[in-house]
Image (cartoon, rainbow, N blue to C red):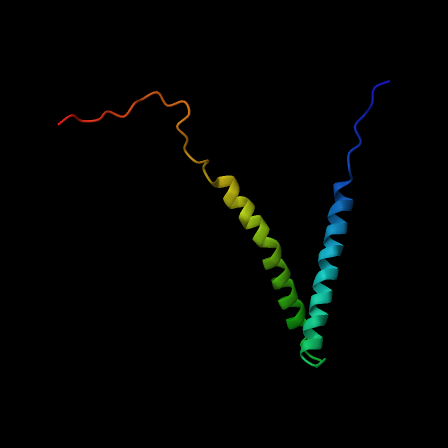
Length: 89
């Protein structure tokens, strides 16, 4: 009998990640609300600030990965056959 590889449900993983992000935004927005002395009327601003902070935080590691992937490896002398000529005076 042939075994069929089991595929992970990427939609379920994406949904879990989205829920996690929303929970983190909600918690941060509540922290901002408390920091302002629990004054009502700025819930949208708190949410947007929390969302921006989280996105900025998540972008830092991604930016580092992009730099590492695009950076050229250091030049090495391995494999070079040319010898530098020294001028005689």
